[in-house]
Image 1: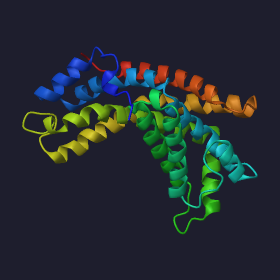
Image 2: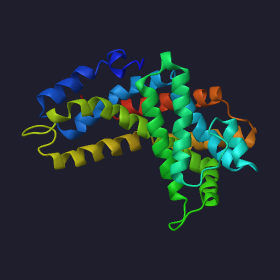
Image 3: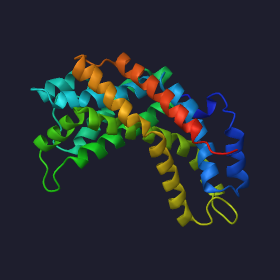
Image 4: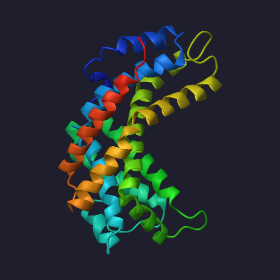
Length: 261
């Protein structure tokens, strides 16, 4: 559909090591995770030029503000998420994904797989955050709106931005690893059995969460300054600039966590 595959990105200098580990096996889990993660550093830099990535982050910033407004429906329409307030988390996810899919169709020629990764990462982070603030039994449309609106606080946005970027790094890693999954399992390989892959995947997830942890304080302070102190209405360009700093910070953290060669 006109996508530029991630495989066409400039070859990273650590990619041969990744291929060697996956094909020949025998690599301990920790070094493999550290080496594979290096690929995400380039992917994050390229994501800054993907309009879907920027839109996914921008909606995570603006959606809670919309939910806190007097007219939730009108505020949703202003940010391209329809004019009907969601009555469930499922409806919210449909509106979020639909808004990003429209951007993908609009910028068809410039769309990349990183846009799909960003859309999935944003939806997962948003769903997790909203569900955490919902009552356990029979949530209403008002509960959905209140839970979304609560994410406008700098502290909760910090957690949301943290998980969004961690999700992207994790999905980029799996983008490369999963295509050779059959070569990971076997005697003297990364995983001796399919059951061991759960431990392997958990190690990747933990690695990504820890690498992106620096985002929490940075995102919290950024939103607090721009939205609450300066009263700014965050634009897409503002979201892009914010993410540029975030990518640099996470990239440095990934480099530091690469481990011994």
